[in-house]
Length: 124
Image (tube, rainbow, N blue to C red; front, side, top):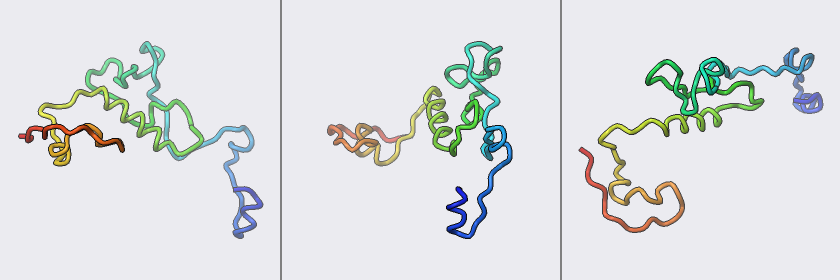
């Protein structure tokens, strides 16, 4: 908030000292700690978010973001988590929503009309 904006609402413009004096922004969003790297000496996770040296362990949070983004990182964390989960194979059998069983899977997430197809088999 600028001093002009603060005066308009009878507020006080304030900032964190380190942001002003040494150009080091801070955040309430804890980030970093599990960075990507091609070797264990250079990073904690690999290109598929798997923790090196720990079979079956993956990172799906803000710890893989190396530094403060300057904005709320919620959407970035969501995108990274979605990408990480795309590498995890689904458990069998796959459970379908009722709409997926009735109308199929094609076009559910787009605004295009899906081609007509037979309903999916009922889940067991």
